[in-house]
Length: 335
Image 1 (spheres, rainbow, N blue to C red):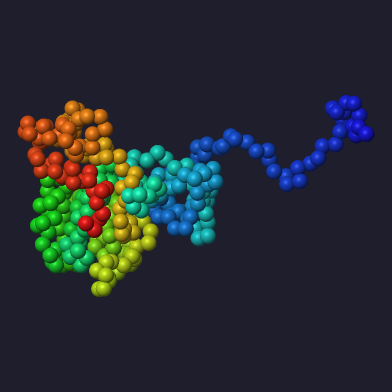
Image 2 (cartoon, rainbow, N blue to C red):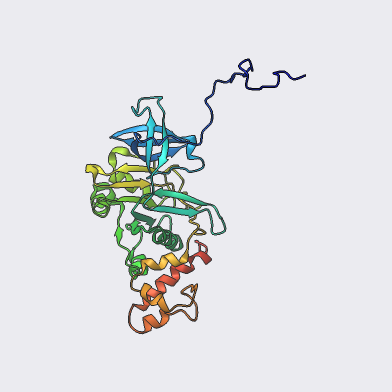
């Protein structure tokens, strides 16, 4: 039996109403042209604290961003309640293009990279000269990650009252990495903070290092009004305890720049690194790669860099340093 007769376009055809009352789905998304610009200061369990026009606003990622995440240092577009009042929540609808991305993997066999910070332009590698003992391989790995991301490295050596810095300064002198040596007394009287601030002016600097090297102590000296918890080195293992659990961006006094304190790392995997990009940090050696064979690793018999150095275009120590960094993926950090 035909229910509506021969003509299905008759006026008496019943149309079932939408019980949920939802509007039809569409692929057209709002552009949010009136969204406010914010800076991600920290991320905690899906909640992002953003700085918007001088006030902090708690926000969450909008569904339309999909799997794209925002990290500390990101510039984002935020809509919703931007008052920053207690129990209010805004939405991040857009992550602006990044100028730099510092990444690492859990180890060299891990295909999944993790973004440490975004939009930084300097990486401060903090290591103690004693208690715990320095780990040069970790320093090398951080340098490779910095060069790959296009960040300027800065070596900060702490606890010089316990051991000499001469060996490390000599080891990294050929790389041209600027270094600052500090001790406990200088941190107490503030002189160390003043010297370090000179290297941070007008820049966004990420601080990295393994636990117990005094990284957060340095950040507290640089930004005393925002003190973070610190811990001691384990007397049995000789390793530091994790006290910083999430990255946090802090403004230097007088709007002189930004520092980002990151959690201590046990390892710094480089599975994501393209070795061909590391050579860009060696402008005295890069022209010599023109005559290298295709896909040259710069550490093989036919590498043109050997002839480039023999002809006097660069210091042999610089080539040795480059090859040491490029081979760090094949060496474990404790070796």
